[in-house]
Length: 366
Image (cartoon, rainbow, N blue to C red; front, side, top):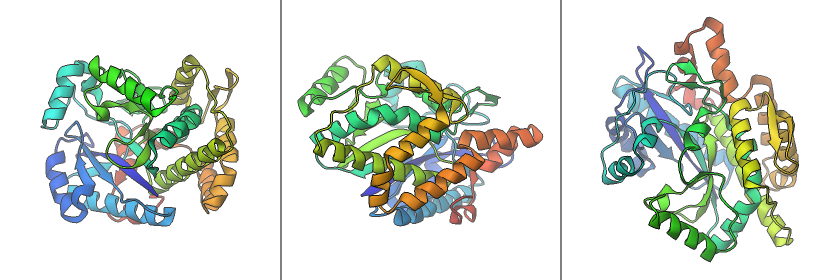
């Protein structure tokens, strides 16, 4: 089973700046989506989720439906919905925080870290109800996280300026005490001990504060991969889901064959995160197996080759190849944002390219 959570930003159609109206839009969207739509920490953000799906065709249909419903709900209140990892325009600091005890506790505990949390992601859940297996799968997947950052990069702009990064959202999250690549887990007891220590020391407030980019879900029987920026199109979302499902399946096959998980040095993995966030697919990557700089596009191609057997078994190989060719031709979301800006040197054009309209959501590559 595969499902996704997507986070969007609400924007003013006149100024294209983010607007704090999440509670109102969520209440309207819930008329169609029920509990599959909710708020996030800032009032600029809306989160939606799909149901668990057996295949990517069903997943794509659900992503289109949730986007369509959210866009329609926002339009009823004179707003638009944008799918970007960061706000392009607007975003006062500190942002308006959604009411609720958990968010208030977060602001009290982490202070200015919450000031730049108008950052949006695409999380992929893969059904896995064995926690020990999920932790072993995490160990096998973690070396590939920088490559996923490069492929999904969609946050080059932040509040009116080009950051110079492909995924500025990745850098925003890197400041949190429990974020980025998870450690190697030796057992469920080891995981529980780590979580207990982090909670006891105040580094997390609850299990939901484990912001590692791979984690066993705290509320559903899945493993959750959280590394991707909010995806600009349905095509990008479904491609990420295909890759993540193949990564999990490939890891399970390796575990069954008693293959040890690669264990790159944590300092190399963190450096590879930074490089992937900086360059996306257009520059260099750090190969954590060798500690050398290599072309980022080559690392992505190596990942897809590595996943070929699993993609074939899942009947996703044709989709993956077609979408990969499309991304190589058009660029990542970050590349497309910059292309939109370069045409007339207007950030409003970037927002317009990212807005999800009810009719556009019907077309996967809209």
